[in-house]
Length: 86
Image (cartoon, rainbow, N blue to C red; front, top):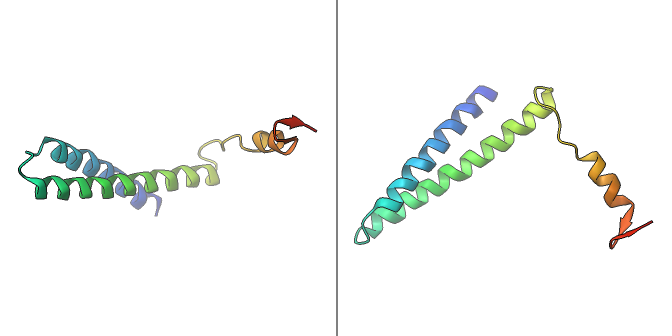
């Protein structure tokens, strides 16, 4: 499953950059082409971000990557109320 998500990630980012370029380089008179390319670029960017975040969470969960240091930040927030240290 993770290989499939990685492939989707690469294809989605390639679509984002390709269609983003087409949207930016389209003539002003070709609004249909510009909007279509912008929509496809947005879809590619959204899928790319979602796939990247899934891969990052999966790699932390399986131990491939070191988990983010979120516990220390929570402890600091728990000790403060409106900026005052308890």
